[in-house]
Length: 273
Ligand code: KIV
Image (cartoon, rainbow, N blue to C red):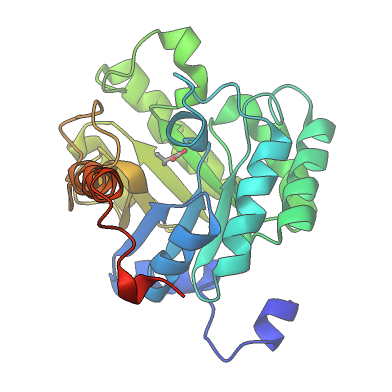
């Protein structure tokens, strides 16, 4: 609340996203894990900053999102919150902090909100985590759901391939989407599912859907910042549009610096005291 009182910027809230959905204005979401990048996203007027557990991959170099801890997510989230004045900040609940025991889930969500100052949390799954969802919502913590490809379940599925391609899985996703809305989630991420299914699910809901690899008929889109900026190189799924090739630019600049140092042309006279 103090954030609203101490700034003249109009903050994006979960109500703003609902209004955007109703008015057909698309929602733009990107990930950030640190202060400097989050500040740039907010300057550019992104609607939602997601402190994704993809931090496990792009910040820490793990091959899955499973190892990242609650303390690590809170560290990333509080760095982001210090930078962001306008966007809605949503934080992923890491693997193992909400499945199975709804009291643990509530404690984890409260720690994220209290210690980072974020606006909302996101968690993966449908009916299997509904007890945790109910308990977290009962404390007044807004929840963004996440269906389709749920990276925290990679060991169950064994592949990052497109999800819900069978009628059985598609039907389960439709039911889970409605269930999450009924129980009070304010929005849903739909990851890597057929575009026709994402369109149908979006049209069946009142809350906004945010797609990644789910076509263009969702209420908004999300990408991982390091992927869309071309900082990560090996990850090249069909859905990823690269807006820059930063890895080349950064390596080029580092090589330039190294040669300046070796040739003793840096620093020059105007760069010294
Ligand atoms: O962790 C993450 O970055 C995500 C997005 C890909 C939706 O969950």
